Length: 160
Image (cartoon, rainbow, N blue to C red; front, side, top):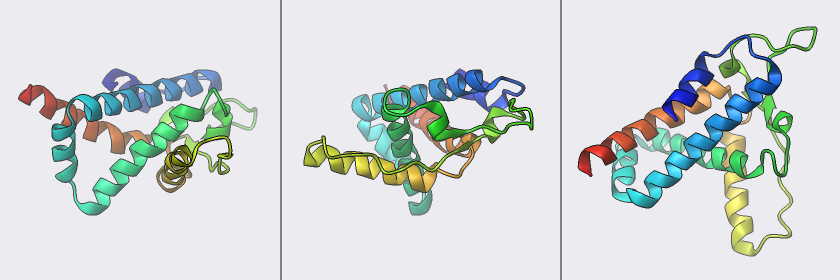
């Protein structure tokens, strides 16, 4: 996760498909590390999270939830360009760092095929996506999520 997100935050001069791939990989790694820590080290995870003030804690939780929404939809139910707005030149090629690209606002997903509990779960993640990712840069998102996860993982490792 650290290598993938570090490369993403520094990358410049890549074409749009490679940028999409780098962002997708970072989303996958961050959400998998988050899920692993929640499942196998819930006390440590909660302890580190509790160390943040209420507003920052809520932003971290909503960011991770929003990334889960992206992970569950991108590539399956939506395309990369539905979620990600690259910076482009007049010629239509990527410019600048990938970290400066932004998350697009997306429409509320169709939920009718899901059971009530699944609808609540998906709607909560959609709302978190809209509040913490949409309109923000890729850098903002991963700069909020990764330091928390690194801290939670470090705590987990030191107490193992």
